Length: 478
Image (tube, rainbow, N blue to C red; front, side):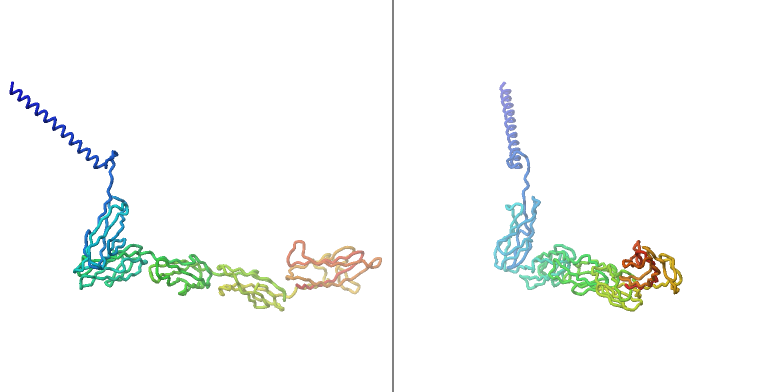
């Protein structure tokens, strides 16, 4: 019985021990879970995590000579905003991270502060010592040039009697004397001067390459042959506004004055930047053939009379002409006064901007039209009536015309005129009851009913009871 009790007590002790251990294990697990939750959640119950912003600086420490230079770099994680603000306790540092140490020895700091979280920063220790530490400075530390532009850099080496450096650039090219030539594309270039005595000592400069722009005014000109046009050019992102002018057709002066040739067509005018020859602008010049036309192209003018001419000029905005004539006179408005003798003359209009462009009109100068007929051979068809008789002495005449009858003559193909002179012989054959004092004979002149140019109508009409006959000749005077 005792062994059982002992054994029973031992069994109970074992069971109790296992229970106590189980309780402790559960408590530990709960503690670990609570701590884990508190550590991940920051005390909250949402279960979301927070990303910490971290800044790292390179190098973390450096030793420089007084006035020495070093470029630092910063890496930001935990934020999409990876920019930093650079500060230093002494010396100077630009926002590209290029640090220039003070001239006084001592210990200083360079700090990179996150732009996303100003409480997060990284610090590098800078020791400025006058001992034989090789350092390099570069001047200028930053520059901006146009495409293909050049910058002269200089490097200073301290801490070594060997002051030579080797030059390198990420884009463009640089010679052994530090003359940098920018590439022909907008970019950012890093120029580095490395000490020959200590290749770990170097300095950097940033070159921003901007596009040089050239613009020509006017941009789409159109002129006539042999005309002149002034061009101007504007150059952007360059220290010089100077350009060189070239043209594929015609000529252009150094000031941009273009003179078209005598051949019509499309030609190019180019302005090239003097400071950056890879930058230029080109415009197309349309050279139109200038033509002149004259109205009327032919004319018939009576001697000493006038004729108005008109000229039309195409292919240019300058429509002025000069007038000339081989006979008579012509004024600046194109009004011709014919000569006093008949013949053929030429009237010419010439473009004032292109003397090779002209047009002419042929003018026939004629004497005044005349007509004479004595009815000795009968009555032509252009007379009404078509009957004729003879006087006792044998003179032929038209008629008879009695009462209110009319004798009419129609003439065609007359020269242009402004006046007419008519003379005729009137024969009174007989009158009954005497010739009353109120008896009249009327004469009228006019164009035909259709208004035909060059046709003239002459009408002779008697009144009362008077018999008459007409023998007529006509001379026309413009």
